[in-house]
View 1: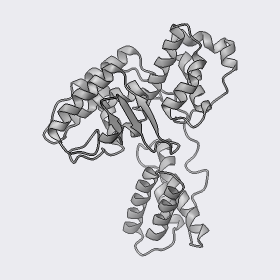
View 2 (view 1 turned 180 degrees about the horizontal axis):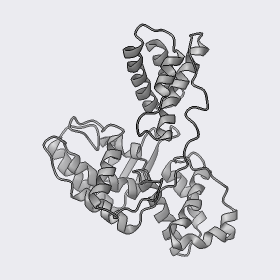
View 3 (view 1 turned 135 degrees about the vertical axis):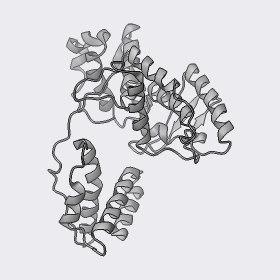
View 4 (view 1 turned 30 degrees about the vertical axis):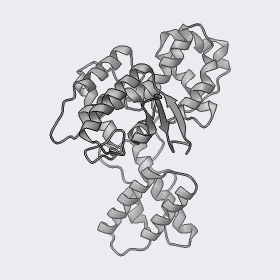
Length: 318
């Protein structure tokens, strides 16, 4: 099915989608089919449902993301007249609603202290330099984990303190600016990493100078939570903290500061929307529903006229 897979990837990118995760799942599906169904030109029900089957310990949301590109492939094949079984829309079931974890200052301190304690290892490359910086960048700038992971050296201007985010969600670029303390931290990091890798493309390079794999930041994050010690990060049942939650914590902190200063928090919406790379203001307004449950300063908003001006929002990842 290589021709059809390549055709779908080419089509997605021609439409402006990076489609990197989709490509990764399609390649894994292709490898599975090559092992189990060599020589099969059609996308059969056995192949499709074999891929769709839940894996041990797999979250239903992860399963859904893994199935979607294969469903898209089948539809693409059917459009060009090839035989393909489309995984039914009801598989694997409804996605689980996730409540973001908003970190307290004590939890953030414990997390960053654990990051600063990561030691150099002969087999782990420069991760002891990368980890303290990449997680601070997620929190201080409100970046998505993938945005930080894919940063190139050319994207980070350490003279101006600007960070260029290219081809992110919504297929748009944006520029965000670092605070002085984060900028100083990044300058120190850059000096150290350059001494190890004088020529590199990635701002956060693996041992080969390239960006880390998509799963790496998540693995590091869970190691830091564990290293912080029992009770240092208090996860709520069913909603374990994730690297993405540092983005949520950033926005909650910004909103909270606005309220503490006696300013209208809704005045932040256009600025936050641009900074976060949201395609529409409704995605940004979602945070005004989220924050009051975690920050006491904003609880009064929940029953105020401000709440009536905020539209209902779903809980999709933003």
